[in-house]
Length: 197
Ligand SMILES: O=P(O)(O)OP(=O)(O)OP(=O)(O)OC[C@H]1O[C@@H](n2cnc3c(O)ncnc32)[C@H](O)[C@@H]1O
Ligand SMILES: [Mg+2]
Image (cartoon, rainbow, N blue to C red; front, top):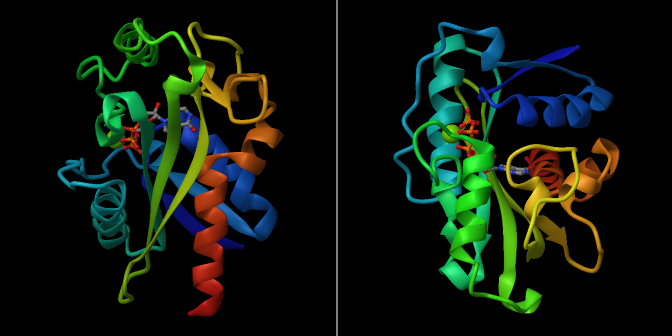
């Protein structure tokens, strides 16, 4: 079995990567298994830049193949915010519920669903010691709901209504989310890039 580190402390991401990568022969480790991992500051200007920073630092520290994920929600009405600041949108505690509340508050004057369009975006970086880092970006289109709905997933999932479906991401089973999410899209692209290299 191939060993890979996912350079994240986000339990929601870890579970999704395990479900996506185990069937293709990877044993997934995350930073939750490595309490001494260095804390990488997300100082990049894009999802990809931040993913590169996280992947390269952790691949270097443990000398092992590492994928990092930097992701978030881009709301058109807010000019793409919260974007790369999604995790800390309501403060440094990275509280999902507080983040959701801030987004709903930001859009409280926007009544038409069409004006509440948004994308989930996932930047992935793959760093293998001694090789050039590879990056991809995946997306998933939708709209911001007026109130949370659904119990599954994590983060902003309860307020993200999927395009062409009358459901939020949190209404989906984990299998369905892993077929259509921004993370699944990005990982598909990353596997293509690996195949071609
Ligand atoms: O940096 P790491 O350790 O990976 O963990 P993090 O939670 O800080 O992750 P990010 O910096 O990439 O911030 C991602 C933000 O976007 C949200 N997010 C990312 N993917 C999501 C998804 O699939 N569903 C809902 N929210 C998501 C997530 O809740 C965070 O608020
Ligand atoms: Mg982060």
